[in-house]
Image 1 (spheres, rainbow, N blue to C red):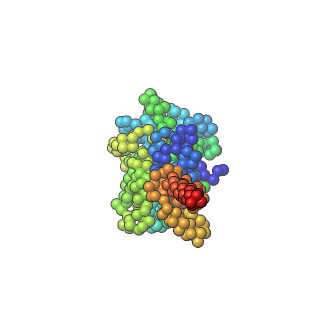
Image 2 (cartoon, helix red, strand yellow; image 1 turned 90 degrees about the vertical axis):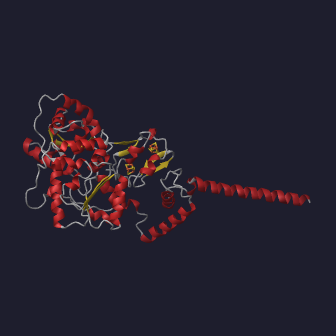
Image 3 (tube, protein in one colour; image 1 turned 120 degrees about the horizontal axis):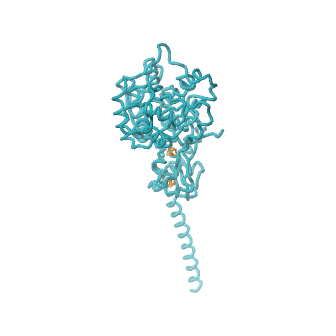
Length: 436
Ligand code: SF4
Ligand code: SF4
């Protein structure tokens, strides 16, 4: 297996090397090399920002195609709560769930059901006082990856619970195996995903050895057929089994509101997320107990694989909540079920570390500082790096040449020209002297 799998990839022939994406990337993972964008695998967190910003549609998110359903005898759809925000005037979730069955799924297990259980488990964990405060939600995989790459000191603040998607898959498979008698390998669970980070999370999960989800299909891929099926339903079977608590996870603030604890903060959009993480790192958010962070603006409804404007989708979720009970899924008393917990803590990634040898890393830092002083500080991107600082780091790491900076190159050329003209002057002078 490759060391890294990423949903976000480049369509090389469409890339014109315009540098728009390099400045948007929160982990400075993109460089322009040979006139094309190149993504450093070890740095990318699959947030999808570069997909959003590219004016040439040269970035895309790989996801599972509907044709994969045929690999399994029994197929279960796991709709993300964000899916419900894609439909106008939706007041009954069952229309969506029945539409999915019409599309060829044998069963549907709402991720919002599992979200209600995760909310209860989080409440229990918070009361136990076993995790460092403030506790940071682990629901957005792009945020969790960002923490392990850029904020190593915050790894032990991350909530060690599986995401609602993962919990839903485990429960759905268990229930289906009992009901059908089929072996687990013949039961396929497909998450209907709003974002590429979830696609990556299934292939390379954090906190658990192996994902129970067999594929992540983009909401944008199912949307056209699903809408059409929903318009032609003859009967609507009652399947929906979740409430406001679970469905609200679709938008920013939904997860934290379910904790029934006022000491929380919910931030969305990658730049706000980074700002909040920096504040936690600097210990400036002392009074808060829970931090919900979503890489996408508006929460999951803002994922690049959704079809609707995030704010419209948010308003629709708000409206849908009026028709739902508060919650329909509860944990029994006793400890949190094992299937809901992480198998291992979050470990930091050394993708941004200069060297494993501290002495060498410090020397490199000094070299980067002095290299940066030679640069104009314009962050123009002409060198292919997002900032002059990132370029200096690339040079010291050996990834490119100092002269890839147009200003340094010009200075060097100027020096050569000056030397040549000085030599010419000297030659001329000695010729004239000889004549005299
Ligand atoms: S934004 Fe990035 S991926 Fe898109 S064309 Fe420009 S350099 Fe290429
Ligand atoms: S997906 Fe996000 S982290 Fe990855 S290259 Fe694009 S902007 Fe950077």
